[in-house]
Length: 409
Image (cartoon, rainbow, N blue to C red; front, side, top):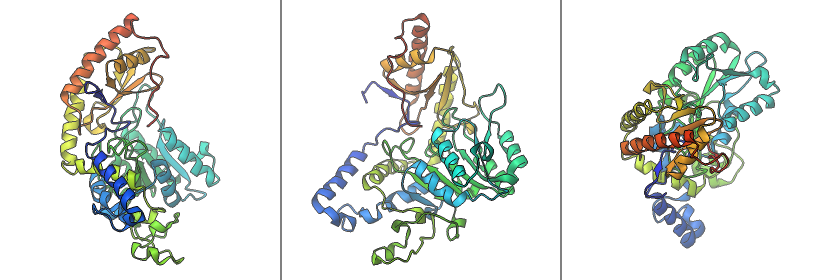
């Protein structure tokens, strides 16, 4: 990025840590000089056969889990499918999945296909909890009430951690507790939550969770996915897909046909993880290891709070994201007056402000505590005011000239 650019788009793709390039170059050098020997004899102490061992502990710390409850593999939606095979076990009476309305499309597609795979109608089997009329976010009490009313027929409660469009941070502990009382399995898509908000998956007794690593974890575009499975399921007989990376590492190269399941989340691995993608994640986690989730959260609350206060003096939009800090991460979603969003977005791009848009009228702004500053926030709001004034006066470019909005969630 240009030095005068202000990047407020960590909710879509995190910036590259300075050390990532060096780590990746080291792996390329090992590949060039050692070839297949890099799997076991690695000059930098990162043998490829166990490359994911180097990213488990810090990932577990970030999501509030035990090391053996976390695995790094695949991608987010693939991991949702893998885990729903185990945790969506519908019966003729208990077969429904409860989720938030207007979830990220890939989540809905995964749930819809899993429901159909089991022979149920998505229209009947998917319960979408909506905001009240005239409101933009979903009240926790409404989620809990739906669980209480319909939980006896619900096999799985599967919400986002942070809603991608509004930026609402759901009260995961309360949702989990309510769902457990009704006998439901509980899972979360943490794409917008991991590295952004405080998580205690183990203590909350969440059954499973999945996340991507390219947003707030800064692992690069298309980065490897992560998953959590609570230790209470470590030795369970739940059905799952299997592959040789989920069998006992000490016996892996015996090459027989006896599957010896790893007790923990790693049993869900079916193949060796991508070394370059895992190393890219390592580069970011080494930065996270120099701070704490608590310190990052403290800065985030101040940074986004400062953004909110400054935005209160600007006309032309409303903030969709809850004002209470415990109900949001770093992102604020701005819903613009009709027809205003795209011209404003174009002006921001031309001024070197990197945010993203979600049609028809939302711009998402995410001051990320790991690398954004209060000066970034102040400058953004100053330029935003100017962009709105130009858009309203007709000085902004016409619709259709903007760079296409970003494709990530």
